Image (cartoon, rainbow, N blue to C red; front, top):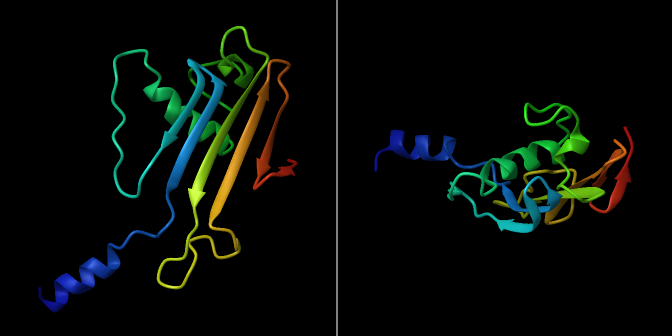
Length: 133
């Protein structure tokens, strides 16, 4: 490989962090689902209505999204018959070439959890610590 190809490879290196796992509890069609992910491209397949889109929506809601075309309010995303839902997104933060992707965090993972209640209340935990608005 030439020098230009080597420079391109260096520029195209992934940042290092990725979503390691998504956990959906009483969220949309998911009673309890753990979706492990790997670095690079992950493909989620299944028939219509299997919950593929709700995995992506769960990630967005866990990260703070408050509006969705799927529901008038976030509490509508709670699985039918349940009083609350929990969505957890776990990011990998292991060192890459001596540096962490999220430098201010000394842990090997960042865990963001969002709780939704039928009453309309919701809150976040970041690495098991309650975060207020």
